[in-house]
Amino acid sequence: MNQTITAKSTCVTDLTTAQIKELLQFLGEPVYRAKQLQEWLYQKLASSFDEMTNLPRSFREKLAEKANLHSLAVAHEVYDPDGTVKTLFTLADGKTIESALMPYPGSEGHARYTVCASTQVGCPVRCAFCATGQQGFERNLTPGEIIDQVLYYARRLRPTEDSVSNVVFMGMGEPMANYDNLWQAIEMLNAPEGFGLGARHMTISTSGIIPMIERLSKEKLQVGLAISLHAPDDSLRDQLVPINKKYPLKELIQAVRDYFTATGRRPSFEYTLFEGINDSLPQARALVHLVQGMNCHVNLIPANSTPDSRFRPPTPEAALAFENELKRLHLNYTVRVRRGLQINAGCGQLRSRLLDNRR
Image (cartoon, rainbow, N blue to C red; front, side, top):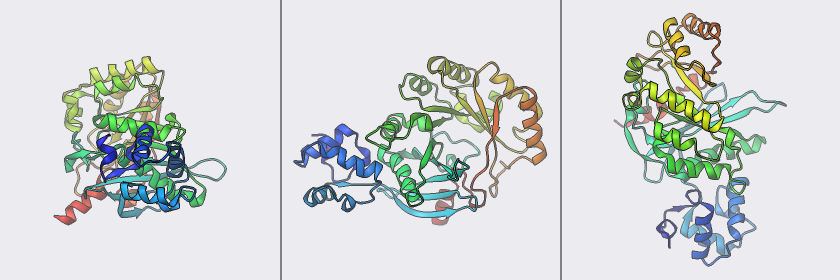
């Protein structure tokens, strides 16, 4: 018997379909109830076993005794006038992570909602500009802890008949450093018996772990790839994204080109603009040269302003000049709409405030 199944701390969202069936056998229940249980959890978005009214009470009681339905508890939540919701969650071991729900204009009067989910507690990459990176790394999230961030916001949206349209793994942590747990979560979020979200509506962001990019290129699910670039040359990127010293730009860009060749899926590059650091016209030209000839898309992201940080947003004039230079050189780009400006919704900022208060 799988130790995961026999432990009292079993969380249903941590289990694959095969493991759920194993749990049912352990409880002396027919395996067909796996479909009923998953329907309540992932489609009807039940928040407790008691809501599963077509399951026998005796079965629900056994489930409640043996397993938890979800793995997160809300510790704090903030709201921005633009509709962004930022949530700080407490995990079973007392550690905390944060996630965000961001609305974007949609069709027929309904907004599209993107969940920005975390994959680790803290982050091992330690990017100089990232609040999460300055917190250090504590542990990987389990598949269920990743899934439950999405389900939490899906339940929030249900009364308005809205739904989660996209999931980006761009929150706390380096997703590729927790690949196995992340991929199990993605498979369940995609599966018809799971959450049923199309693979193309999910994107993995990475600072550039080349072996995992190569592994992703061999996966069957058409999940998107985004590279946290932020600098057009090794000298600056070594300072901003320290993992660049292990996986320098020449090797990273070649790995991304190989990814496109293998999958046909267009990668994207995230380039956060910081005043006086990476927002000059020569750096815009260097960025174009770096990705020249690649079928890709660049997301320009004016930095969120944070107190006591040297990483400040560019002036409007500098941002516009950088953008115009990309346009002049025919680079495919989008200026990302900044969300959560009034609630410091950048990655790790809410958790940083909590940790500072505890200190």
